[in-house]
Length: 384
Image 1: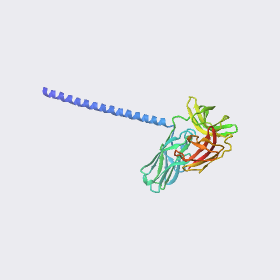
Image 2 (image 1 turned 120 degrees about the horizontal axis):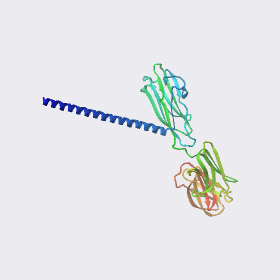
Image 3 (image 1 turned 45 degrees about the vertical axis):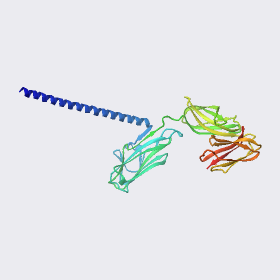
């Protein structure tokens, strides 16, 4: 009897141990699942935050509100646009991105989904057109029998700052028993903007020689924290000295025109550089550009280039009043010195053959001759 009682006790203890182990396993599994769920939810939260951080503007169409879209036909029923036995066009809103002309381009991610009945034929079509500033940026086309449930397009497009974009969906369907449809939320976009706006949007910077001196003009389309401009001059394109400081307009989205005349421009070729400085001291340079002021020694000197345009080499022809040593100088159109070469100048006409040492891109260049501080000629030449 005692032996049977001991057996019952041992069996009861084994059962309790097994139940305890099973309970621990269930608790452990529950903890793992709960932890995984928390991690998943946190990752979802992080994903949504990352999307929000990178998206400066977005839209999801509300099909219950017809003012957010335009359709040429079809019916909006139960928060979806459905087209049966018809040809229709749907137009999304025209979405304008932030910024001003000259700012970096924006990137927009566009997602479009078009559902279908699953038994459309070759005679049924769907088109998706994406427009940027009124012109087609990209387009997609499919036949009904190539679709399996949903036609899906995900497209990254580039939109100029201050520009606009729009989605147009066009469908054709011949039967009333089959259909195309777009549901609520199935046309979305997100525009990513630069981290911060540029301090100044400079649209032009020009210079010309007048009777009063060298006159410079520049225009801004927008300004952010613009303290002042500095105009500097150089005789060699390397060492610059300040000529003038012109007050900026702080922060503005309005166009502003600036000008300054340097009445001390020296004779010959001069380089001018424009610098813009923020309130925090950040500076950005523009240019340089070049101007050439004639003097009595070179007013009547004639110079020319042949052939012009040239392919590999050309001859620079000019006249001189005396024998002397000089330099043939060759610049790109921004005033950057590409090469200078010592030459012997003879009284009368001089024909100097020239083959550039560096490989040149097609474009406009400048060639001239100087002796000391005197410029003996300067001519534009075109590389084919």
